[in-house]
Image (cartoon, rainbow over all chains, first blue to last red; front, side, top):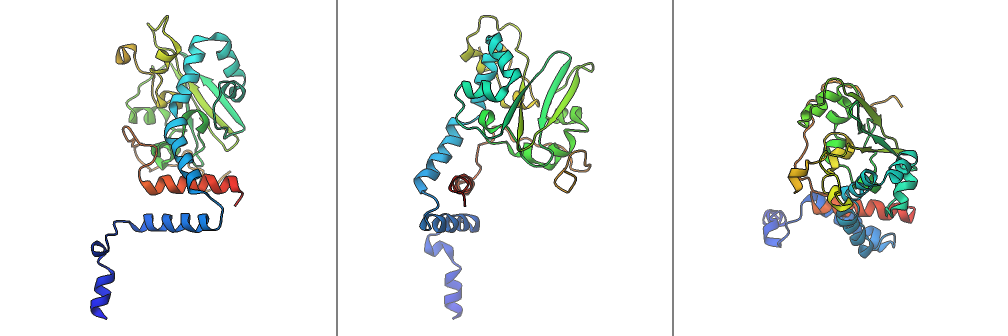
Length: 211
Length: 45
């Protein structure tokens, strides 16, 4: 018996490199597939969508269009959900998407102090730090300190407004268009728009960084 | 809501640590679990 016991724990002899978590997830997927609740091919399609189709590049398109097209910008600020759907965003998560505009006098930041509410349809899945206790706790009472963690410093006379997201209402920051980008195409402008600039924990890239 | 999940304003959690070039998923099992979660939501499970 002792010999058998030793053998069953020697994973290398079985060629199994799966961790306990991988085994659990595989078991869960197998059960759900066998019961007919999920189709593994559909799972592959969902993963592909979130790794390639839904992400900050969608939000970057929205911001670049707002920078280029005053009527779109007005529509975005009036009804973010409607404006973004009109652009063909593929995944509507929240009931309301609200775009908040940065100006020289006002900087906006978004957070979900309760959990991880985030504008998936324009930014994809949230990064780990967005869901972390330090960000959720401090964004609302020490936003300048949080920005410092990101290496971001605002002028002292720029006010900061922090928006707390919910399951029904998500926010996206419309950052300020960098100077010296007159005449740039929407596509080129979109290359300046970072994920963090749409959360409010960063700025768009400078034109020299993408030239 | 006022409860343990409402972390706004709580103290003592330290610095925000952002991962550079963070991938959408960190491990293969995260991909599968996320897709399972979405799929069973659609299926109404």
